[in-house]
Image (cartoon, rainbow, N blue to C red; front, side):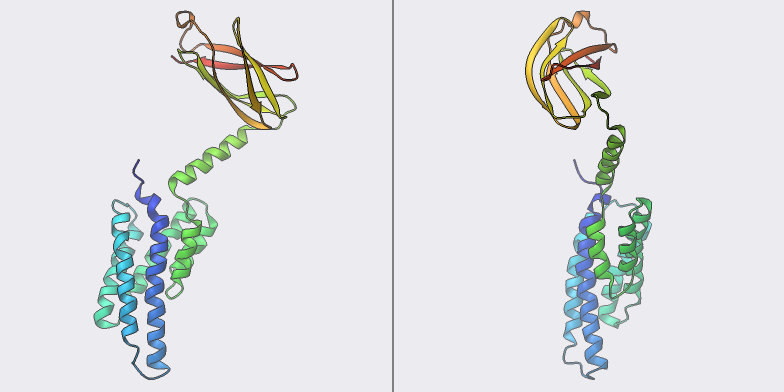
Length: 253
């Protein structure tokens, strides 16, 4: 599956860190030699920084193709235009402005996702001369929409699991027409499942059980003609200490 443009903003952040770092460091050195040492023998340094910055910016256009983020698109266009304009005029205004819009893109994403570290990194990235530090932090703290979704699912799953002295089922399991079934349950201790019983049929097995959430997947013999889609059926498991636990599965042919 192709990644969304938003998913690529992590890679984009490190490219922006390299691009802004190359430009601002060379620009700072250029200003230092011009105004402090009063000579221009290292004037070529600024053009080296411009070259590195532009080369690093090129892949960003492809990585963010289709991205619907006004601040980023405006910032990127301003920054690229500013770099080219600067090569002829040595006026960095558009670069500063584009840099600001690129930084607040990550700041706004951090606010939206309640990611305080990314929000603060975005603020730093919006400030000229230190933006390469901010974009490096954005790379470290950025989470793609897929990562955020997985974390929310995991958090929701953890909220469903509550400590208990006895095993209990988590959600409703499912069973297919070939007898394959699965269900989740909480266990307060480490153990083993030694047998699984469905109706009058029992199968011997040896499934390790850990403390916390466990997923049981197995197969039992069924007669599909006697099963009704959407109905709930019981499956009884026996632990190594002789205790039994009954899980409920929904028949989904």
